[in-house]
Image 1 (tube, helix red, strand yellow):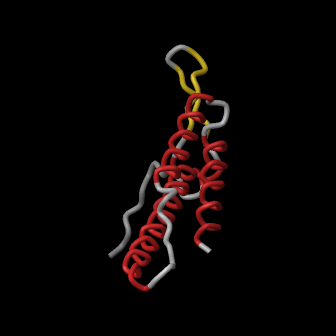
Image 2: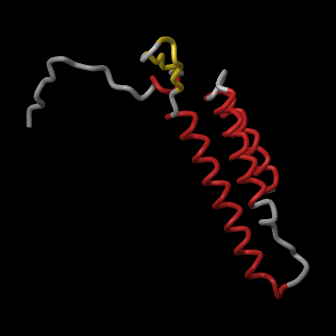
Length: 118
């Protein structure tokens, strides 16, 4: 069960990386290396159900696995919703490549705010 979640998260992070950092080979490579490094670092975080003596280890490892899945999911959401790519278009000029996700939570600007009656 958790193996599918881990693989799904791995793929989602790489898809988000490709979307967020499109056309930026340096950022794409750095993000790919970081994602792969983190997954390799914790790849042995599994459990062995060979006996009752290691029950505490199993519970501890499962908690770690689900905690890491949660952290990875949070990272994917943060990347997708908050990272804005900037592209140099001229000397001292950067064009921002915002995506639809960035515009959904923005509030319209109002020059003349009104006071709320208490």
